[in-house]
Image 1 (cartoon, rainbow, N blue to C red):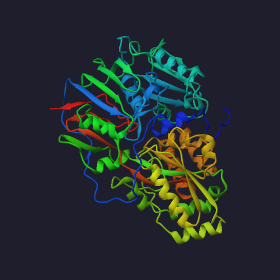
Image 2: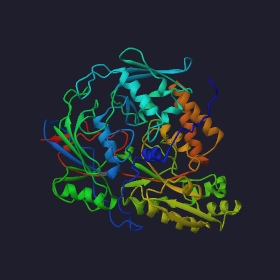
Image 3: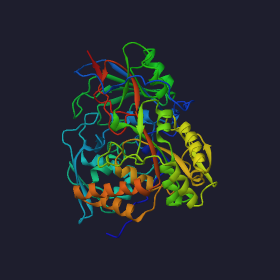
Image 4: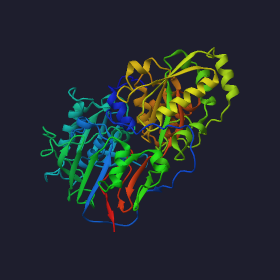
Length: 528
């Protein structure tokens, strides 16, 4: 096998980046914060859901941010929380994320053979499609070829690692996929790729024809409005509890809250910190947080392709000079904590022992002066993909001015936020990220020149982490990569905010997998 770049640059599109962030291209974020300080304590939240066995039957109605007419039943198309919540209960993946690591779903194992330059998948037996036919290796081969096709809106980034179109079925329950570069932990790469398995021969994704292997099947679908689902009683992991599930596509965060308050929904995903601080808007309702390991990390990525961010003294000055506490108080209103310049908190191999940098304004100013950066222009770009990103960017700019930079702010819409040309013209770009795997965090962000940090030690560490089959070597490599980023990298991750929702007290079975913004609903139901 010929040598490969340490940090591959697959065919990554803006859509792929949006999927990494966990938000859809057309998703409307909640309103930005209007103040820069919090007043009073945050209202209490409930972590998790009610204990006890849910009852069988009933209809669960859940509201998520959607993408309007762009929503689709084709699992290679949508990236909004409503799309992704729908896909995850209609279809299954080969592996999924839970507790920060890959776990088996339709595949029970993925074994790398670096000498044979291949990966062997062993598939789960006894799985049926919604139409009653058996799931086989031919369906996986079809799915891989479908994702590899240049006709897709966004070809899979897995193509950088696997020759998807050359995958072969060896019997009904084994698939062999040729690899393009050494892959030591294929399950993690597959789990992070949004690879929903579709049935061989699928030619239409209309509501009356689409089938999956997931816990619920589609009975009605209207893009941007709602999806109606019914339980698949023969689901391989046990039938769900709610007989029916209705997913409501509601862009506005306050409208989602109102839907629960008025009895039109049982759950509202991703509510604002301001709404949570006001407390539950009615009896029998709870403000829930997804837990510390599911928090979203807020930060900025410094564009080292520009003069000032390319200087390590400038990067260090910004890390030391910003007031993280002020940012956390202004944005999270009591529902978060300062961060240590690393993304990936909550994922397997994340370094918990990297401390939050102490603030040293005098040293920051001295470093900027030594770098000749004092008084120089510094452009910060932001879009409101998460509640408070724009307000945080405004406060960040004020803090940079206090350090001596001639900082300015460029606010754009979410549709423009990660436009390559726009990012290239800025020194810092606001960037939120949930607890996705470190493999996703480091490889996908590195595929964008304006987000990447070209560093020989970092690239070598990431290459080792992705290619080694040794658990100990992988952990050591990820530790090295994170220490590089914390010490001299281009991430300024300043805070981690809770992911909050509003739910009826008796609603349970909400399982956080890839992101709490679109949880898995296969066991949703109501306790007595």
